[in-house]
Length: 465
Image (tube, rainbow, N blue to C red; front, side):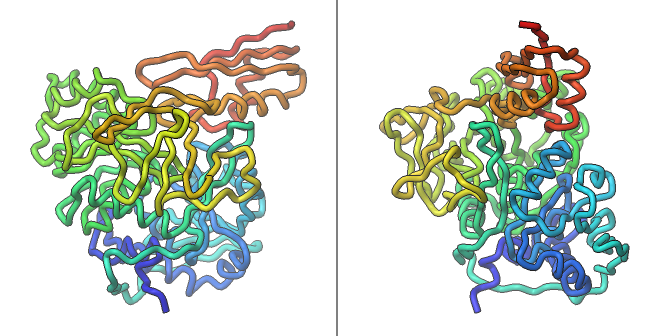
């Protein structure tokens, strides 16, 4: 039998880490108990994948354990019902783990397990039956194994991304991919059992899952979750809970700085040691302001879903090069091929759920990222632009062709065009130009029911031409 630590949830549970008030082992044991005590769930998952539609919180780990080692589709809580339905159909989802507040996003009739009260109990609604499953009387979980155990080459997570051609593709990440990247994070960010991570980013986003949840747990640390980002509350937590690891996208750090500056311009957080920013280009000005307000350097990293996700980072063991993406992550090779950043390593995904002809390509093990860059003699990479059709908003990728496809399917619309509008606090706003016999209110309503919250256009222009 292979080492149990070759599975992501079991590896997360093995080092005595905690998520909020719960031990990671308790959360994982609850998920295993759910499988043992809910035969209809096991039947619903037979030959099919699971899905996790949850806010950032402890229940995510319970859901991952209850996915029974198979690929679980990580669904962003900001997704629209139409997006959820597409992912369910494309990935052949048999059951979903969620909470009652998000049930209205689900397709009718899909088997669901509500984890509002996890890890104490769950509510299963499967095959027309509604039952409560006690999860709190399990016998715990004790695991042992090597810290460097390679993850299994089996599906662990599916995350939808890379909609350059108009339709998101489900990137498959294996246990090997995710564990390799999380362990590399422990090394590069120098995490240990004293680490306290404030998890602001959604766990449905691999940046949040790998760096703010998995890596601290693999180090035996503590994770404090925040289901919805609130800058003032986050500052209170950072100062009051001895947070040492803070990870976010540029708009998160901009929001925190705005709150800090309203409170006098300085944050008293002596435990804060590692601040990591990624997901979108980070300005030198924001890095310098953060250092001035906190005394801690803001270190930039770079990654993408298909690489589990981190590829480059300004490691703590090396100088922090402001304005640069950093050097290769542990275990990751980096090369610039015809101006494009390419990466290779255990973190690179095996492919997409469906045909990946319109996604990112892997050649001879090298993932071609679609991002342009240069590399200096010391191995530091600088971002220089994109070859793929996308831009970012609040750290999320926006693919114009996806929005144009969705709006173009609206009755009365003959053409839809999307462009980015630079906007300092959230990277970019979204401008949508529509040709057709429709109103701005009608277009806005169409988008609201079919696109994630972060994909909603800020400006809608109607043309009859």
